[in-house]
Amino acid sequence: MSDYKEYQVKNGLNKYIDCVWRDDFNKYLGNGDKKILVVPDNTIELAFTSNSVERTAKHSKKKICKIKSHLCGLKTEPQLVGLEGDVLLSVRFKPYGLYPFTKTDINKTINESLLPEDIFGKEILVLEEQLFNTSDELEQVKFIEDFFLKKLNSNNKEVDHVFNFFIQNIILNKGNVNVDMLAEKCNVSKKTVERKFLSKLGLTPKKYCRIVRMFNALKIPKNKKDLKLSSIAFDNGFYDQAHFIKEVKEFTGMTPKNYFDIDRTVQTNIFLH
Image (cartoon, rainbow, N blue to C red; front, side, top):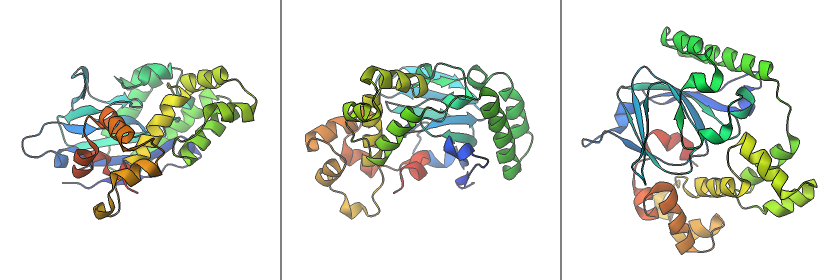
């Protein structure tokens, strides 16, 4: 049974890609479970696997996909994920990291799982073949770096300083920002900011602030004895504990108490403090 492994990318790609990782999916399944819970985690994943992956929306029970290698867009709702196999290799993009590499409408990737070639073109099938034909993990990372560096240079999208300013402020302040005040500070209209977010992130600034705030609130405490819902709610800018509980239920499908009691499985390394 393999352990979780994480590799950093080079050549400036770390501005957009958080890491390349691999893990044994089956080690998280137990007691007859065939699927694991995956909640909004402020990431986009490009998963490479020769086995079928099934994703289902937890709230509506709607099947999102049954697919092999795929791109899982930014999530705003919980999903149940099953994999008919074991080792999974994935490229973890930062929430705003997909835009420079594709001409696809980012809005269409939210809560969806899509074929890699529909996002990056058929040339990514060559990358997939390279990854499947070697077991050398460092060589796999090099193949991934070469592919996305070439994509970045060929797309050559202009840096949007206003968008970057907003993203940095939202992340720095854990989602607790006044979008109108930031827009005024940048001397741009609220509509302009929303248009930038929808084209580059697929969400409005307000929705993204909610995701970032909840992401920080759901991080695993270093000591579970220190777990106090009222403190977590206050520290992360929720109006009160009732508001916090309502948001947790929407984003995870569970009460905060039940959610903090479960194993984070494949998302453990994302939510660690």
